[in-house]
Image 1 (cartoon, rainbow, N blue to C red):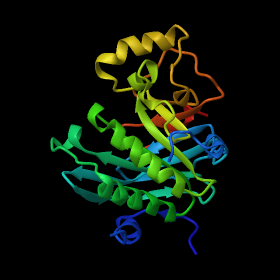
Image 2: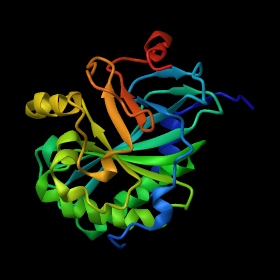
Image 3: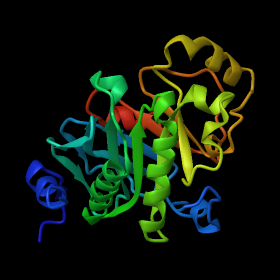
Image 4: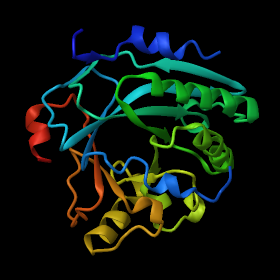
Length: 255
């Protein structure tokens, strides 16, 4: 058997198309996924060959699927590009959710729709070497409670050893308390592409300030093309986004 794993349209479609809580976070949630490497590379929708990575230093969070919520329907879009990693590399399966903000069509996010979303997200655990899942959802204010309900439905259905991560706008982590008690292991603050909040948040971090939300204080989300003038806490995991396919030279920056 070839030890190289290729995540392709055929594999993902086979696994995923077959899918027709409480606010107090259990103690096990806080420890799940802590054995991940210190640097996680985001592998988005493009061909990626990351077989050269040192699995002790690097993990990969790959876009496994995009779920578009329109009205009361869920449109499934599998990953369409190959991903190559070594068998030892730990993987995080990322589900991107798109709704009102990106489609322009109001999403209902009702109980049946949330159940369908949960089912599709759980199917990503069937992919080889997946040790955690991450939800990437640029949620608008009117969708916050529905998003919380989605995570509360998802969390109890995950095995105890599987970590649950979410991305978060950096502004959510500074002074907005809506993330408090979310049933996740971490909320990764995306310190890039921040729009009008860019200067204020980068200035806060450069002065030695920190995120007010505890869930946002275990990791950083940064981009290769937006270097930051700040001191990183070495105890926190680093997620790195690249606007082109990863190369060995790119990765050397984070050795």
